[in-house]
Amino acid sequence: MKAIKKFFSNFFSSLFRKKSQVKLGLYGPPNGGKTTLANRICEDWLGEEMGSVSAMAHETREVTIKEQVTIKAKDGRELSFNLVDTPGIATKIDYEEFLKAGIKEKDAKERAKEATKGVIDAIKWLDDMDAVVIVLDSTKDPYSQVNITIVGNLQARDIPVLLVANKIDLKKSDIKKIKAAFPQYDVIGISAKHGKNIEEFYEALFEVTK
Image (spheres, rainbow, N blue to C red):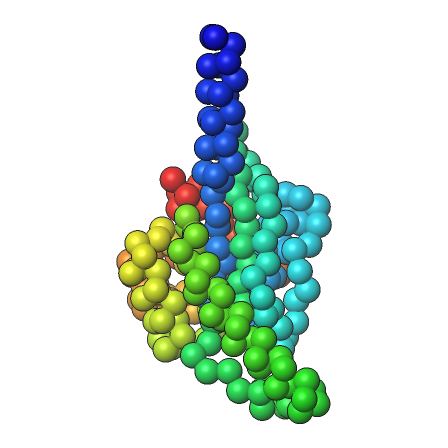
């Protein structure tokens, strides 16, 4: 009888552990560097990329998940999570954006449709997130309708947030503007492309996922 109880106890505890796997979402406007950061994380800790990176807006048009990413802190702590890379959030997606990139009209309209669905799915996925990293291009004005929409959705759900000011390797980068726009969040300045300050970013992940 004790053996049976022990079996079920271990079974349900392992089941609970699986369900409690932290889901860490990468959110932000198009071309902020979400997928570049996702690739940096996956390359550093898994030795492989997460997805393709493109200069074209809305290139990521569906939610992408990389399971069981484990990072380690200098003091020996470990953090395991499922990394969720989401399409760039936009309040308006026009197929003409794709036409300007040289894509034929039929394909452009299809891409716009896929991108719109991707944004809707990304917002829905917020309900499953345990913590979110908002990735912003630090060379651009943070006071945008898109950024305010993202932050509003997160605040409404009371989800822990780490705000990343990406592209600090560029001359126009201005982290102070991002800190002033969203003083309620911790802001880490990084270059996902070149790995600058990436260790500070990893340390901050331990705090936001507590």
